[in-house]
Image (cartoon, rainbow, N blue to C red; front, side, top):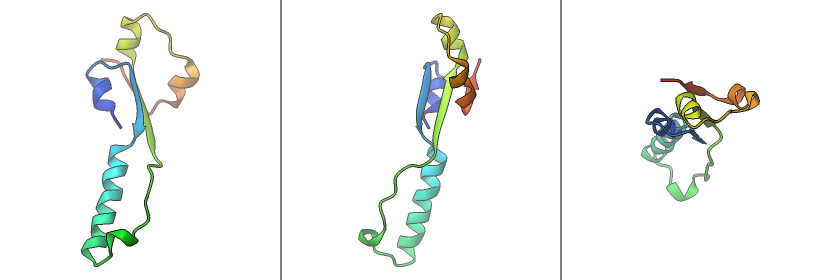
Length: 79
């Protein structure tokens, strides 16, 4: 997702996995290059989302992130 913002100091991010979106895009391009008409391809929505938390920013702001949210995080950045 947008984890690069969190690595730069943002508190957290929650968004679609860019890796998954790029993989899906490559699949679409492959179909088009093999002759499929773009208008005939189904519209797809993101299905894989990532939660990234910056523990250093949490501490600097004096916040407490609930344990339940920490357990759901895909990545916790602490540097």
